[in-house]
Structure formats: C-alpha cells, structure tokens
Amino acid sequence: MEYVLANLILSLSCFTTLINCMLPVPLRINAFHVPTPVVTGDSVLLRCAYELGNETLYAVKWYKNEGEFFRYVPAAEPPLKMFPQTGIDVDMSRSDKNSIYLRNLSLESYGNYTCQVSTDRPFFRCVQTTRQLEVVVPPSDGPILMEEKSDYELGDNVSILCNSGKSKPAPELKWYINDQLAQSDLYDKETVVYPDQMESSSLALRFRLKPDVLHNGRVVLKCVATIKHIHAVTIKEIRAAGSKETRPFTSSFILTVMIALILLMTKD
Image (cartoon, rainbow, N blue to C red):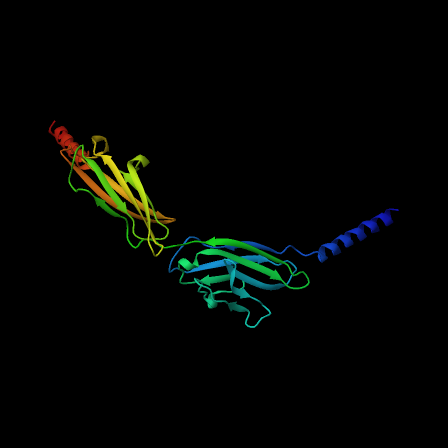
C-alpha cells in the first residue's frame, strides 16, 4: 500500500511539472523609461525592458500618439525600420530592440509614447505601456525687472514688475524679499500667449518700504522663474535714503578689542 501511494505521489509530481512546462511564462514589460521633461534641441534615450518567458519575439513597435514610428522585427531584413513622423528624429545607429535614441527634440516631439511587444506563434500575445514625453522651451534670458522709480525713501511704496522671456510653457514666477517668499497678497500675476504659441509671465510686487523690511538700510528683492527643473534668477537691491544703517559687528572689531586688552595687561 505504501509503495502504491509513493508511486501515485511521484506520478502526480511529474504530471504537475509537465503542466507547468506547457504553460507560458507571462509576457510582460518590466520597465519603460521616458526621461521627462526635456529641452528643445536635446537628445533622449527611451528604454523598454521586457520579458518573453518561453515565447518567441515577433516584434517591438514604438508609437507616438497612436502613430507608429519605429519597429524591430528579428525575422525581417533589415530588422530595424523607421517611419517618418513630425517631431521624430531617430538615430538608427544608437537604437535597438530595447531602446530608441531621439535627437533634435522640438515642441512637436511632445506626446504619449508607447512601447508594444508582441510574440510569434503559437501564442500571438501582445503587451504595451505608455508614458508621456514633455518638451519645454526655456527663456533665453533671466527675468527682467522694471520699476517705476530708482530712488526711494523710507515709507515709499515700492512697485516693481518681473517679466519672463518667451518660453513654453510660461514660467512660474516667485518674489522673495530678503530671501523670504513674498506673501501672495503683495503681487499680481499675468500670463501672455503669443501667436507662435510661446508664452510669458509677469508678476508685479507692491509693498511699503518700512523699517521692518530693511536690513542695514536696504532690501534685497529676488525674482525666480521656474519651468519644471529649470530655474533663472534676477536680483535687485533697493536702498532707502534717510534710513539708519547699522554697522555689522565684524571679526576685525573683535580682533581690535582683543589687541587692546593684551596691551593693557602687558603694561600692568
């Protein structure tokens, strides 16, 4: 009886192993890397890592907004093929079955990119994943500051405008007063869209030149323009006539006091 039971268990084990070998390992895309955002004129490498299991690869196809622009078919000759599309410039020498190298990016390169992997007979399965590639045009220069006047006295109202250069999208502007973010009730925002679809931002800062905002008779204003991870800064210093400036307690003053004390002790 024990011998029969042992053989039955062994047979079931072999049958389970046979079934597992016949079942396909899941076809899947392990990773899809799309660096974003990118700047116009730059190049970028898109990578699509996939696992076939026990299936045979038929094709890897790349799409931008539903339009195919690149494919890899190992059984074809040549295996790599590109299809023209606006905003797409593929460097074929740096592209393969897992990645494509896009160069000379433009605003037309912006869109949803899809990697699609399909297998050959007998399964004929297909998986795909999509990521967005965002393309930005940064301003050519830092923010430009415009003020109503250049000379100020204590108690004056300060009105200064920060204008960004043309870009896409419009930068986010922020004002800082003595390295402290200005309160939102102190400024007004405006965004302009031009006929070429480029944009710019302006941010007006208004506040009163009171003693509590002055440090040694001056206030430092900073306008920061940000598009994604790109930052540009312009700084303006305003001095108030008639304010009392306090001299900093410097190390040279401390050294002078120490020397005087030493001389007094030496005389004693």
